[in-house]
Amino acid sequence: MVETFAALAEPNRFRIVELLRAGPRTVNAIGERLDLNQPQVSKHLRVLKEAGLVDVEARAQQRVYGLRAAPLRELHDWLDRYRQLWDARARALDDLLEEMENPHGRRKR
Image (cartoon, rainbow, N blue to C red; front, side):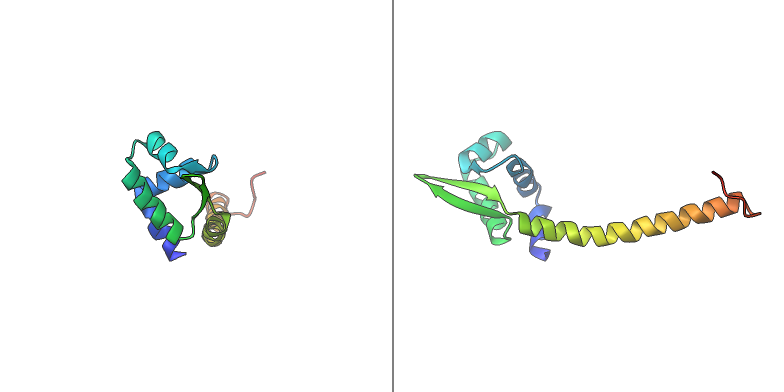
């Protein structure tokens, strides 16, 4: 998962992943859409591929890149653990604030 964070930390790689959410694209299509030259796009795609975030398919003379769901799902699951922790803490804070507003135990409805 560290590789996923490292790959997505670079803004252009993050933009490429966001673009690929809509579907697979060629290197040239990515470059045109994000206003990057072909060597830049290829460099970023190589890092994303090494991190396991994209797959590549050869179609004639072109390479088509698409997202791999597994690393993103793993990242989502990892973040969800923290989301659950903060949700529980926010509920506890809400309960405490309500108790402070109503010290005699009468809960608002």
